[in-house]
Image (tube, rainbow, N blue to C red):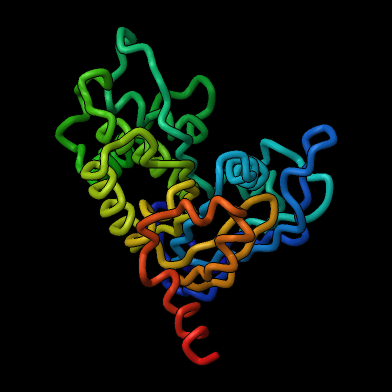
Length: 270
């Protein structure tokens, strides 16, 4: 492990340090091929957005990285370790969850769940656990809301709570699955601004079906629909979009200009 990987500090000092390496990954559900020949390297300080249609394998890719699904072929290493050991360095934020609003749980209670792996089963939360809870709540802008009932928060605020819960694990990388699903445009914008700030000290990999939603936030973009098209660039060509979305690429509107800039330059030189 790089000496920059300091638990609790989320240091990203050496941006050339590889955190996740995926080689020749293949995944099938029964007879259906879901992921095919996936190759990806994620480095410290990366902020990668993976776009693609529903059912394209985005969530499956996350589940493989988390060790929840075993691939039929290929290898994943996290900080040079197999998934079973390396996944402890990952904080995961699933898609926005439904919950029983009558359930009496506070914001701090939810975030403490991120510390469950730290004490033993019968050990109480330590002073440091509480310090971490307060620190991550402050980072997501909810420090003063720690004793509020989760049911009193808006959808955007609850999503910040779930991000804080993931940060409470003191991860090297955050995985976020459709973090702005069902949130309106203004709330989504503030959430992406939060992620931009968090990226100063933690590597981020998020997936979305909406290219427009992530365009102004992420550093690099990949397209996934069974196969992955990723070149460590912030630009996506029309060919990549067509390979990912097929004929429906014509239905994509408001595609950010910077994503197609290189492709347009190439056409200009032809």
